[in-house]
Image 1 (cartoon, rainbow, N blue to C red):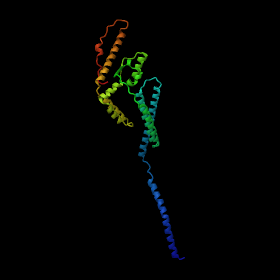
Image 2 (image 1 turned 90 degrees about the vertical axis):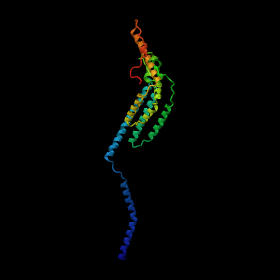
Image 3 (image 1 turned 120 degrees about the horizontal axis):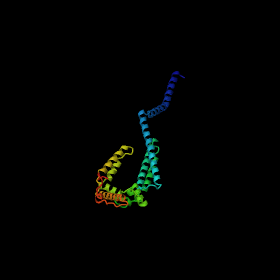
Image 4 (image 1 turned 90 degrees about the horizontal axis):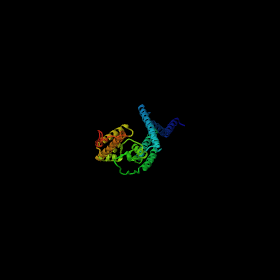
Amino acid sequence: MVPGKDKDLKKVLQYRLALIILPFIMRALLKKITFWKSRKKPPSKDYLALLFRFKYASFKMLLDSNTQFLKVITDLEEKLRGQEVFGMSYVRTQSARAIFHVLRMVKNLDDLANHRYGQLFEALEKNKLKIHAELGQKIELPPIELTLAYAQINKEMVDWVGGKNANLGEIHSQLQLPIPEGFAITTSAFTLFLSHNDLSEEINNKKMEIDPTNPETINQASQEIQQLILSAQVPAPLEEAIQSAYNQMVQACIQLDQKTRCHGSPCEAVPLGKTVNSPLPANTGRY
């Protein structure tokens, strides 16, 4: 073979080999570049500190809601023993509290687990709909007086007068045990007060501004609702009903006092007219 031609052939072979190998080399190099570009930078200390605070807050809220939920269940179990009187308003309130805290637990658990428990939200929603279906059939209470003396109250009236008043009325009417003279302002009075001042919609608007994760919004809404109620006017029928119930209570107290002081001996009667018809104590107009 001619030496000059051998060199030329060698160069040609090398060139052709380079053309074959070069695409593989370029693809491998491109993969390396893409890999290094796709690598995330290590998180900064500030980011890690923020993440820790978020996870820690989620864990605390999870534990807090778990505790509150257990308190609701415990309270319901105690009521079901039959030693305390309660109505549907209590059941609805406790159900709402239970749903709220379970939702809070699910949300914070999902945050702690990097959103791996999304299916729990669907399960909670199904159970919430079932609970609302059971409680949604609201029983219309028949009209009732604005005030009721304890002698007129029994445990069946718990949704009208509340648990404590219902208990006192039951003790008096069923067991004939002595209780302090008094009367209850009923839910009919409450409804009249709200409707007279158009407060229901305003109160609902204030409640919608509450952020469950921000306790300050709860305090703010509470103060604003309280101010709405304190600045509202008591309707005349309600004021008259309370005044009348108060006068009857005073008369009963005076008669009881006379019986106590005159027991077994003559006693001069105390004129009742001025006392019974006396107005409510100072600072009235707001009950």
